[in-house]
Amino acid sequence: MWAYRLLRPGIVERVVAPGSVPALVDGQVRLRFLAAGLCGSDMPRFKGVAGPRYDGGYGTAPVHEIVGEVVETASPELGLGQRVVGSLGRDAGLAEFMVALASKLIPAPEELNDVDAVTIQSLATVLRAVAKFPSTKGLRAAVLGAGPIGLAFCHVLRGRGVAHISAVDPIERGEEAKAFGADEFHRMSSADWLGMLKAEDRPQVVVEAVGHQQATVGDAIYGVDDHGFVFGFGEPDDADYTIPYEQMYLKDVTLASGCTIGEWPEVLTEAAEYLLRHRADFAAYISHVIPVGDAQRAYSLYAQPQVGRIKVVIVP
Image (cartoon, rainbow, N blue to C red; front, side, top):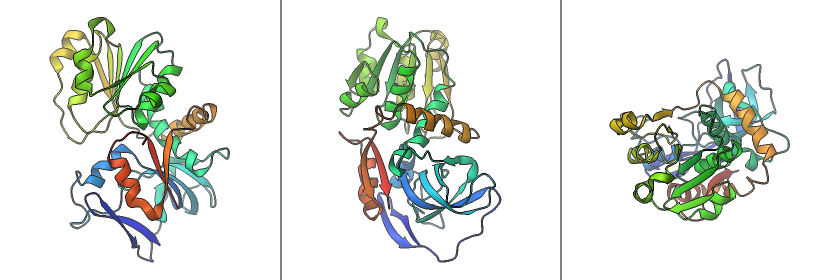
């Protein structure tokens, strides 16, 4: 059985995994790898930010967005031979066979091939987040970060009746942002966007879809209008954040966040249905499909934001 491990920060290598595999516990399934999507939340481990683990090594090459075939099951919900999509969890890795909780998976729609089905997992997290928003109909919104997650937020917010969407990213993604529903694109950092923002143009809703730093959350709070709503979606690398609390207080701002925990079947099903309804809009969402034998190129490509790179999917 092949697997990929993180040899050192930024470098993955293919290895032969042990022939013996641990027995499944109740609720688990063993999957044969069909496709996997890379995500920004995989990158801290890839870059070594998360630190050494597993007896001093860096462990498996991180991946959690998965499409696989059930080859062994200890769950009544999923049977042998089913093709499923969902999340492997935070500490999973890229391998020929993977263990996952059935509660974080759903059967993959027959209408979608393995590559296209990968989008369901990340889209599910966006839909789950937006479900926590107040009514956005007729409001102005800004999305900080126009990567895969930011583009998905633009699409979902447009469908919820937002009157005007501004997308902000230092990488040129204007064409992609407008294709996913943004009205305007600002090629700049969130700090520069904040500096050019006029009082009358302040959005009532700001999505922080960058993560891995504290500054962008602060920029979102400073940039949102009075009585506005800020959602911090991007995954944190720090346990504690310093935020401009005085600004929140004086402007009566609501700050919300949160990751998907126990709602996986529901949000994955919603995302699958959403994707099927909007397949044409998401046709360009996956920009690169790379064979697993070239996994190093896939990880290196995703680790460095760049023009033309959106979602990267690894296949057998």
